[in-house]
Image (cartoon, rainbow, N blue to C red; front, side):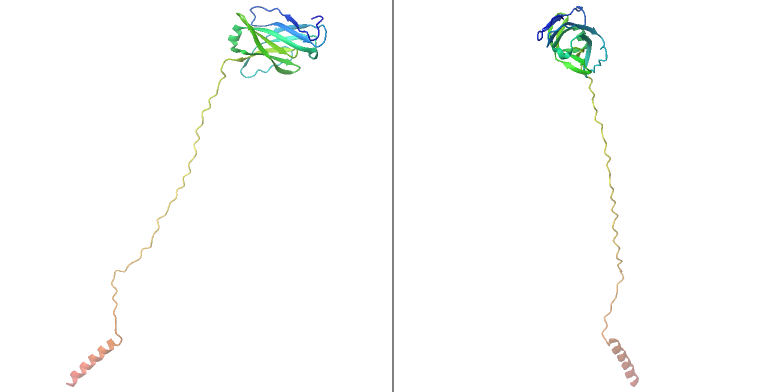
Length: 210
């Protein structure tokens, strides 16, 4: 770029193969100073350099592109990328076009780039992403395939039942012995026995005297 004016976007259309599964078709750069600079955009299947991208759960990566440049991020006011993804690729990878996004890896930090779908033709969907700088990017999208779910089967827990057996010993009542024999009780009149004896003796004496 030569004689770029501060605050004025410089739009560049990039050549791409019409049948490419993913391609960068344009870039727009706005600087905060008047200056010349160079930009080179390269599409790759793997991230270059030390860029390492973590892939969120349920996301798929379609490709990467790297931007080499002679302008510092601190001299940039805005950067906008336009890229195309073939509909065949979208269907094959099973991603939702509404959730396609750019992810940037710059200065050792991974960050999401605001991305929107801006158009379609018969073979491709077109997207646009607004980045704060130039570096390495990944094109990712949320999968339309349902994530596997784990069904947790409740485990039946058997609680042991503690039975307390209480045994009551029969109470033995001591048997009371009952004497069935008849107790004869006599009632004696004081002096009765002595009187009988005297009368007997008196009777004997009278018999003798006669």
